[in-house]
Image 1: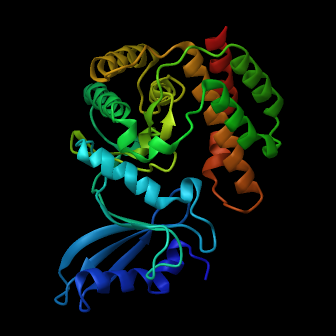
Image 2: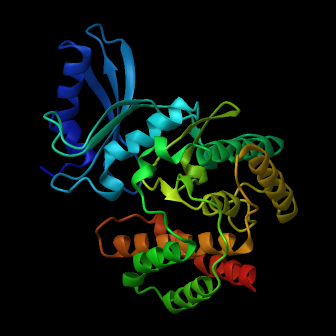
Image 3: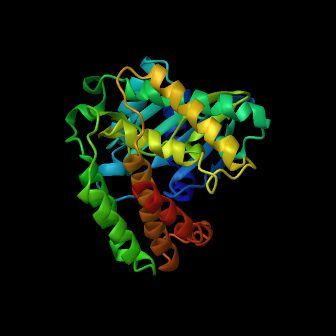
Length: 331
């Protein structure tokens, strides 16, 4: 019993859940294993006895035998989604979440599928992109304005900016990529001159374009909350702003337009968030360091066969420019 998404569909765990929740004549059909790093997420439809669709759900299940800690603590993720939904932040609706249950062999969360397109694939007009990114900034500011005590972040030990760098250094270190020494030097510079940060806030942790679902001309949902915690709001903001940097914005926006959009995004964020400060160059360099560390980590999983994904070979080519930009920001 491997516990992967395909196995969960094939072994009847989802079908058992559907029978319990929707009645014995309801059927789970049209299973689709969704792309992503975990490889343990499946979308499926629920049909009634006449074959009519009555729901479309997404199930995420931790690997069987793995303890529900960290990014596998799906009850914790559901807690963030509930808190966000109560604050009318667009997120998927949680239908079921349990780290231990009689229905599933491992921690499982089931949400309603949000129909739409991820922002990188969104085919809006160039003029709409500024408005869409301003929407993203507003949503992020509202996440940062959530009361920490009303979310699972209340039990977190907030990471200082230096601790954040040390965490991602440890993630990258086993990778043995050719630019690891350069990454280490960048980490030393970041740790040597940490900035004053704002009060810890609820952070998403991975507020990137691929985790924003667009419906029409609106952001319909923020997904993938596995890294949410109490932390630095400015690192979260810098993560979004990184995608407005010319080398990273891959929809044909030139550097001048990107800079104008970046200013508009930061202005919208600052007028929405209850307590924030401008995103200093240190934070913008730090998220580029974090992205390089994530690339190193996932590339290692790819080449060792633990999680093959050619996407990371492509991403590897972007690292020199990424590190160069971080170094310039610190200088």
